[in-house]
Amino acid sequence: MTMPPTPAPTTLFLARHGETVWHAENRYAGISDIGLTPLGAEQAEALGRWAAGARLDAIVTSPLSRARRTAAPAVRTTGLPAVVEPDLVELDFGIAEGRTLAELDASHPHETEAFRHDPAAHPLPGGEDPGAAAVRGAAALLRLAVARPGGRILVVAHNTLFRLVLCHLTGIPKRDYRRTLPGLRNCAVTELRVTGGRASLLSYNVPTGAPDGR
Image 1 (cartoon, rainbow, N blue to C red):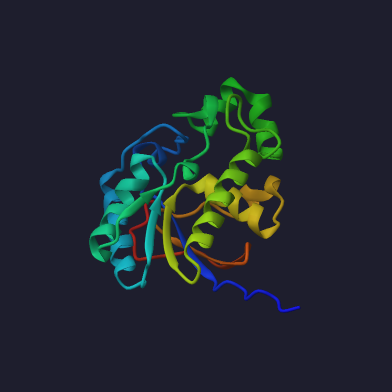
Image 2 (cartoon, rainbow, N blue to C red):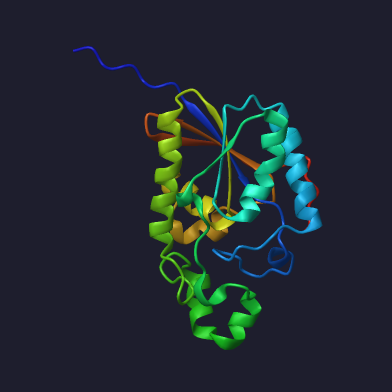
């Protein structure tokens, strides 16, 4: 029996959006639609310069404005339109939205202790289930790969969503996402290769020349 040919690998370049006011203050910004800081806008411009030489075939973003604003310079330098993918939205962090973990330690010490121990099993109260978020985000990336075999796609979205998705696709326990995959830098690039529904992590958190707010 002749086996069907393996689809050409698709390369996904995952980039976290630029810095926001809340992130500059270490506040959780999940589904809250928070704008970029001036530094975040500079980081987006650096990503746009990187995109100009990346031979991209498509640009896809989360629906939140911080991701769309970050993708705008890449749209300008490549001439490619930005396609919005609703399933790439960041997690809803529930009571943590707009607050720091230190503030939550004071008001919800037991919940934050459980979160630190296993953030996948014990999300902060009122937040989205991390396992469900990983499934929706991974499904979105796999759909992109199927739609563009052999393509090179810039995907601009969010820190926690991307780390959970990477765990889901590569077999890392989701409970370890905060420890095994340190936070993504703003506008750094993580390269993922998808072939026949299987994903390989080629690089993680590679700088694009964007100024770092840390």
